Image 1 (spheres, helix red, strand yellow):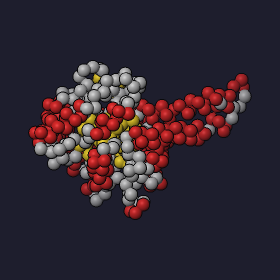
Image 2 (cartoon, helix red, strand yellow):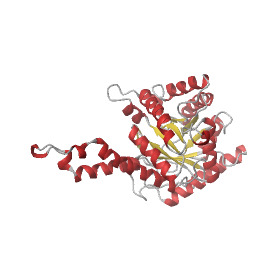
Image 3 (cartoon, one colour):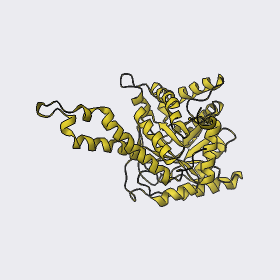
Image 4 (cartoon, helix red, strand yellow):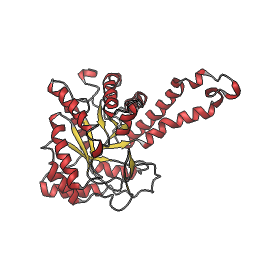
Length: 346
């Protein structure tokens, strides 16, 4: 327990409060992908420096990497970092939620389902779930199959006090082996949203976050190279609200946001986005200082011409601190852009 009894990792009740506050305040939490204890600290530091709560997430590839290259076990990697986060997050004056990112159908049994089971066991014993939310990425499936699996996972998640994230239509580009062409199909329709509401409900069956597609593309793109239509999210909200009588029914997630303009982000926030994923930009922000250090100190990090180099320059702590600072700065910038800076729970 930390400040005034607040847990550093959000309880289910606090996570719901975080999402509700974001929706009402028209801001979003940066959801930062991490692959190590070092990138975890960078994310936590960035949130703390921006005085923002946030979301830490682990993809299937990140979890496999965390599990070690000897056996590459995703569940081991995810659990290990989550347990680590529960300890070290107490030193940061913020609240974070733990989330798992894109999980396609062929990896559910080796990732999301066992992780939900672990949290269910913890909750059954009177404890808290290990992760606060998990993502089911059924965008490669038919919408009918996607929603059928979503119904099963939502029921299990709700029983374990976990929020589910679903992606109902494709996001372009490639993310941990799930890829889609960049074309006109990258836009969710009102009909898609209505089918989602009919299958998953609007909260009564369990809370879920919705990754709708409005031209989003994973990867590295300059502003203007991807045609985003965040105003489409308003159409989805209003279309479902008209039938079900619930205003602004969806909590949206913004995927593939690299290179988005400030105007596009603002429009997305105004239309119900409460979570925006960052991975590409934070990866670069972590690696760029390391590359600079290596180039500027090549004769120290390498044993050039038979010399011994300089331990102080190739010590991982030396360049690791630079990497952490670089990524933390980018996370703090994201908090400002998404208007979550200065909104942390008191």
